[in-house]
Amino acid sequence: MSTTAVIQQQQAEMTKVNKAKETAIGFIIGGLAACGAVTFTNPWEVVKTRLQLQGELVRAGALSESARPYQHSFQALKVVFQHEGIRGAQRGLSVAYFYQICLNGSRLGLYEPVFNYTVKLFNLNISSTHRNHGGILAAGVFSGAFAGVVGAALGSPLYLIKTRRQSYSPVFKSIGYQHESMNKASILSSLKHIYQTEGIKGLYRGADAAMVRAGVGSAVQMPTYMMGKDILLNRFGLPDTVSTHFATSMFTGVLVCLAMNPFDVISTRMYNQGVDPLTGKGILYNGPVDCFVKLVKIEGVRGLYKGFLAHYLRIGPHTTLMFIFMEQLKKLYNEHLA
Image (tube, rainbow, N blue to C red; front, side):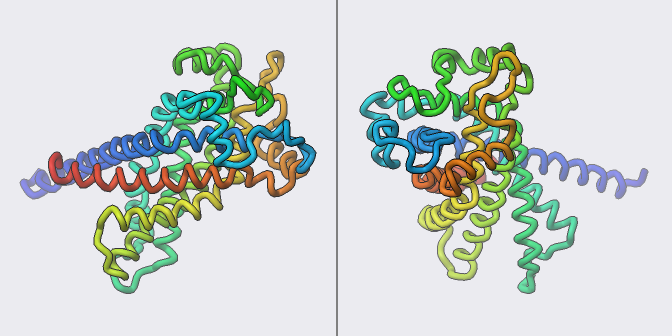
């Protein structure tokens, strides 16, 4: 082999190593950024979960006031603090950290490599003034959806435990199915218990709904944030600062919440439903489609948007904080460790 060929081979191997390193760093930064964000937004996730389960498969207007302890998002947060304190408001936070590492580590870590590969595969020019905007947007949507589905699949058993913990209330036992044992065991013990009682299928109960949920949310979130930031920086000349990241993130959060809320409601109910100990099947729903049909038939289309405000109050700040933390962590890494 000639010297030139050896050098080219070494350069190719080095490129592969660098790409693998970039993906790993992206995964770590994405996971850390999401953990930082969820620390502040987890109470709204608790509220959202309970609002989505309140009045499950009860016709709109048929639920009495006394049977609706949670009237709206802010009142619900107040009620949770009053009856359960800070521990209740942060219920499920420990498992949420591990879930965020799986989900957002994958989403934020995989998005750029998949996007760059897609752009290269279809020869989309992103540097020219004559950009193929439609193709670039499609590549962004595909990359975001792919990364979201992978993350949801990896983190599904953790999301299952998180949802069951957050739905539990020691005061209001009528809100959804109450998995009391989930709040007394460690994460590993909970996973072991689910596996022993429900099998591997039990660990991935609701995973299909969660993958659709994450795929839709990520398909909207990632490209709109990246393209929105690009527009603010290059078209409007704004500086690459926290305020620019904040503005982009808040707008992105609105779009994500509008697109994802119906899938989020279905996902929450699929994860939280009780399980028949004899058949191992869900008590209320056979699958996401069955859940959708029953929900719309009994509760109406409005049922798909239960907990919408709480969802936005969670996902808006979460999106903002996550991307701000991500940008700052990238900056620190590039300045001190790269």
